[in-house]
Length: 218
Image 1 (cartoon, rainbow, N blue to C red):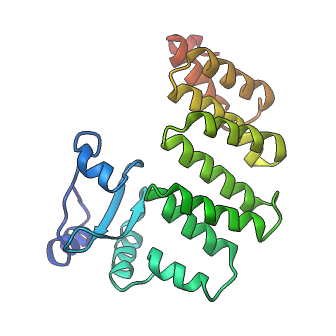
Image 2 (cartoon, rainbow, N blue to C red):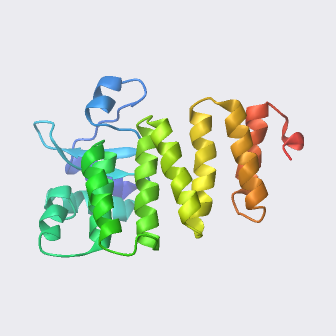
C-alpha cells in the first residue's frame, strides 16, 4: 500500500492500518460517509471518528496531520472550540468542509452561510463556500438542488467561480446520465470560455458522451 519507508515505519509501529474498497464495502463507506477517494479516516478503538484527510498529500504532511489529530490539533472539535473565540471566515470554511466530508449537510450549510454572512457575499471566500456546498449536493445526489446552486453562482459571480460553475453544471448532467443536456452544457462552456484551461477537458467529455474517437473530439 505504501512504498515510502517513513510511511511504512509509521503504520507498522504507531497505527493499525486497514484498507477498505469503499465501492464494494458499502456498509463501511456509508457508515463513515466516504464519498471522495481517497479518504483516510482516523478512528478511535471504539470506531468513532477522530477526523479525516480527503485527497492526496505529501508523505510528511500526511503523517504530521495524523499525529496532530491524535493530539487534538486540527480536528473538528478543536476548530469548533477556536471558532468560539475567533471570528475567522477561513476557519469557518475549514469547519464547513469537515462537516461536508462527513456527510452532515445541515451543519455544513450553517458554516458556509456564516462565511457569506460575515463578509462580502460576492467575494472569493463566499464563492468558494457556495461552490463547496453545491459540490456537496452533487455528491449527495441532490442533482436538482446542485444544478440550481451552480446556476445562481454562474449568474452572480463574474470571477472564476462563475466560470467554474458553468462547467460543474455540465458535470452534474453527466452524473445524471442526461447525455443531451451534458453535451449541450459542455458545448456552452467551450463557447463562453474558449481560452479556458479546461477547454480540452470539456472537449474530451463531449467526445466520450458522443462515443467519438479522439480525432473527432473537436
